[in-house]
Image (cartoon, rainbow, N blue to C red; front, side, top):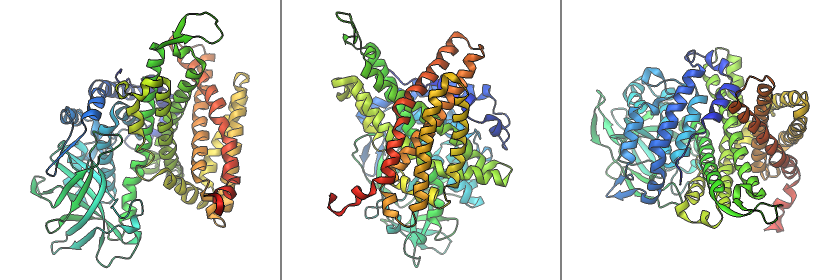
Length: 597
């Protein structure tokens, strides 16, 4: 199996043509983010992903992690790769400069995250969770906590985790039972058990900083009574040196379908009297603070889906070009050809390619709003971009991860029987991808968030901002005779999306069950149309570049492929919109009928 090769040309296209770099460079701290700087960072990241992380993907899957008397040992080569990852500064790309970060825009760091996930998703999970813990501390930690912990977390010397789930709670965080008892020195003693903690124990770094959701005695019932605590594996002295081992221990690691090289841990807090922790922010606001990490993680898990999709596509395309089988359709007695010549194989490969490029483009554009919501000097613009980011994060998370499972499955189908054999590597991508629609809230949780908090609560206002931009693009496409079919396809998709948004807004308060049964289809519809919006933007830009006759022959081939990919997406993916809208608006009666199950 060939090693991962970052899709540099498409990534640079996203940054140069789709992302609003002028807006980004106008934000505080981003003035020096030129295309040349971005290109250089992407090129170096591509080398690291292909040469260091990708070769460990298969061996890590085979070896997995080992639990040994409370210690967790990672696969061979993992520790050396992580040390190089941290030493080269990759852990700190979008982190604040004041704590040792490089403060790069999220649109750039997201593309690099995609590389890590495409090369080795089990490895990439560790820095992803650390980044979420950094966000929570940066925004809600005390000055002392930030100064003590952030420099070593930003550098990668220490890693971070997110501890929510418990055996009896699952996704229902109102059922969290981990307890926190105040001590005389202002700290807390925590007792309880957490499950499914990614990189909750490992041998990569000297310390692990756990962000733990727990209840203080006397707190209100439900999610309103949860608080957030910082609980390090080793206690930290005032000078930053490590002190005694804290009372948090790994009881076991899970044996999983995929991501075998990523330790998924059961952690026990307080087996020997209590794990010492520090309160983050105020008591009983834990879930609010945890969602700082959660939203960052949800976006990043969506990026996992993009990276896995790209890797599955690369592997399937390489196999299809090499595998000689059968003659070409319509050529009687012709020579045996590579299967990439067979019509259905081409259809599958283009489904993989077009959806991956649509997801990458959409994630890159949404990343601009993530930064603008924090940094734009205008309060009105910060509010606008926050509304867009809030709306699109469940779409990025849910749509990209569900797609990654389908795309990885298509990759196996392209391989035929050998795709079902582990040695080809195609099966690993499906096994690894299957967790992503479950991570950080299942697709249904993302979809319920979309219809409830992001559509019904604001009357569809943020969604209509995006719909208006889609309509503008459709008019621009319609003004180009060669792209008129794309304009028609986009307009039909936007019509379907707008009908579905109207249905949700009008009926959520009065018939929540009927609207909720169509929540996941609504998320899929939003993703398909939003992805089409960006892919068809790419087609229009490419059309203009070709018309200007300023492209080299290599560039011309890239731009022509962009237009063809968009046309395929319009015909095979965007065309699903009307059917999804029909199900959202009409499907409740059959789905909810008492005798149906």
